Amino acid sequence: MAVTFYDVNSPSGLKKLDDYLLTRSYITGYQASKDDLTVYGAILKAPSAEYINVSRWFNHIDALLRISGVSGEGCGVTVEGSAPITREAIATPPVADTKASAAEDDDDDDVDLFGEETEEEKKAAEERAAAIKASGKKKESGKSSVLLDVKPWDDETDMKKLEEAVRSVQMEGLFWGASKLVPVGYGIKKLQIMLTIVDDLVSVDTLIEERLTEEPINEFVQSCDIVAFNKI
Image (cartoon, rainbow, N blue to C red; front, side, top):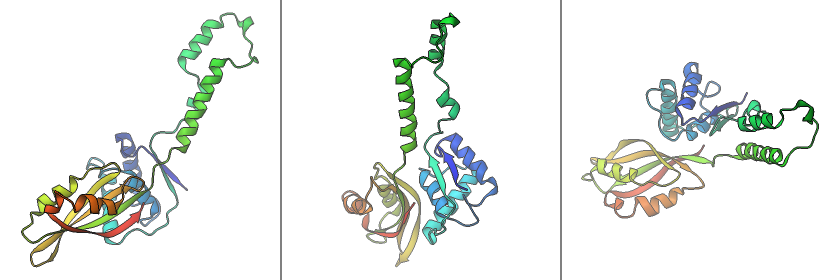
């Protein structure tokens, strides 16, 4: 059965996800799957320790992406940006309209229950229908999870400043994740860092060629390599 989550970047959305994961290791099933990647990709930054179950699950999926990737198909999951419009919300007219109607219809004998809709009623109905249609079509662009190797010039490069320089690159649709230093040899270490990108907004090749290996960041960075690239 498909699962739906709402507003997973808000406190209320994270709380519901945290409750859901209280008795589960994964979003669906007994192994990591594309359902986990869908929810993972919708969360813009690592959840705080306040949401202990979400934090545990998020870090686990993050580690799997860095080590082996995720191949399970899953059962299907949907992540919506906001709570859906309920049937009651659609059917109930605005309070102001109700009061206005009551004021106009003091005499029950003058009420025509089967009369034609007024222009105002038609306009309100069209606006509600348009809002419902728009919310149903609103879908998030595809995302990808990327693991980069960032290599310094030599063993004298300040790796802390190198990482700060890398993370200083900010652009719409780019979200930096976890990182670690990995020994290469001869006292040299490379930075291995995760990032999530919105596919329609960020090109990894452009990010590397025009930002990470250009001035002033190339003072610390010699080169960058894509280690893993997974669609979410």
